[in-house]
Image: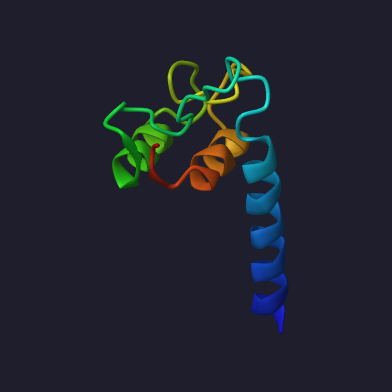
Length: 85
């Protein structure tokens, strides 16, 4: 029962992040692949490891430009998980 509730919360958080993943980051109709931290054309485990390695720091892993790499950036990365198009 507890796992079902956790799964529901996680899916809700990721869904919210997906909806705001490009908020303020798009230039007209062109949106960057926000979660592609290492810029290899996909958001994958390499980007996740880079983000975790920079936890609490500023820089390219600070996806929402809040001043540090934190849970909000992790959620943005997860919402972008896949190939960039």
